[in-house]
Amino acid sequence: MAEEVLLAEDGKCVGSLTKSLLAVAFLASFGSSMLYGYNLAVVNSPAEYIKAFYNQTMVARNRTGLDDKTLTLFYSVTVSVFAIGGMVGSLTVGILVTRFGRKGTLVRITCLVFIAGAFMGFSRTFGSPEMIIVGRFITGVHSGISLSVVPMYLGEIAPKNLRGFLGLVPSIFICLGVFIAQILGLHELLGKEEHWPLFLSLVVIPTMFQLMLLPWFPESPRYLLLEKRNVHATITALKWYRSKVNIQAEIEEMQEEQRSMSSVQTVSVIGLLKDRSVRWQVITIVVVNIGMQLSGIDAIWFYTNTIFENAGIPVPQIQYTTVGTGAIEVIAGCVGCFTIERLGRRPLMIGGFTFMGICCAGITLSLMFQVLGLAVCVSLSLCLAGVPFLITAELFKQSHRPAAYTVAGCLNWLSNFTIGFVFPFLQMSAGAYCYLVFFGVCTAVAAYVFFIVPETKNKTFVEISQMFAARNGMLEEESSELGVANNPQLAKTNGYGAVVLEYDVIEKK
Image (cartoon, rainbow, N blue to C red; front, side, top):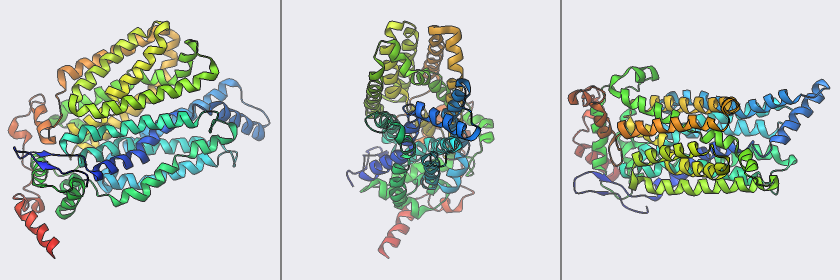
């Protein structure tokens, strides 16, 4: 392994980045998160070719083509069905991660990508526009699941001082997926009429690598100990991810979390919403996740070509300008990833939403449209992208985390779908002033984070829960209620020395 994870003087676990942690973060993000970004942008370049295919198919079937309004509707369904699939997928997250684990879920849902790739890749061969729509829906389901599971998995395997860094790795790959789709969509590469089925189905390649390699990595140690009660597997997983390390402090932190849980059972979405001990955590993920989607970034991305055209850029050059914005987004995402552990979560969110609000207010000036559009993209990548899902992992303990990700994911996709449909009407009625609505959203969310959300950097999950206890109206003794009494397997490991001794005996045998 690359580096050691040492025990600090105060007994707290201080982690360094090992090869295993970095490899699993890259692999999980490459085969899952990157596909989300790729599928967001992949339909932009071949839009006219797909519309022409739809029209030709209808002529062959009905001997009459589609009018412009119907053709636009067909294409709109093709684009938006991805978000509908994402919302459906996000609703299944809690069930899947509880039954199959975090890594197990990522491995099993790879089959969805292969099915979707086959549908989209052979759609022209079978002359079926429906196959494209079904394929887009299935990729949406996969993205809806993976967009929650990947940060959950990385957040649980990372030591607390690296949760921010690893938690933002998926956001870099999302930006990278958009950038790759923009490059491959150039006319010189796959942006030609004969190549669009291949362009849509390339999602199977990164997933294939993930399917071959990810099963060799261990499951989340927290899932193994707190939900499966498998002490031996937990220690094996920790040794894999921590290399040469005394893992005693981390085991004790997990057991402290177990003792603070009022129930060892995974909480349902309804249970999460009714649980007053996490009331403000739930409100926080609702505000932050909806705020990210309604900040105006999606509306700007949806109309990037129009923005550049209005700025006077020649139409043939717009595709290259769009690729340039994608490159800026990837760079900004990397900067955010490497600064989050130094700056913390709150400054990134407050600064990001504030800056985006200023940009959205100024974007009403058409001469500044292009520059501010780029600024918002940089702002999102640097300060926001990935943080809402990272903060979702940190605000909840093991029993509540799956349900929290279900709620956060559903809100993300629902807001994404809503802004895509509402924005054109908002733009028609308010013109350039429609961006003042986004200014209001950004300002409100920045104020909420400033006054309500505490800094979670370098805090254990138990410490974060205790920071919210007073705001939730919970007494300290209530928030640290013992849950280990009804769990004999964990009860016998409280001293941890017995666990080490038992493990050492097994190793010697």
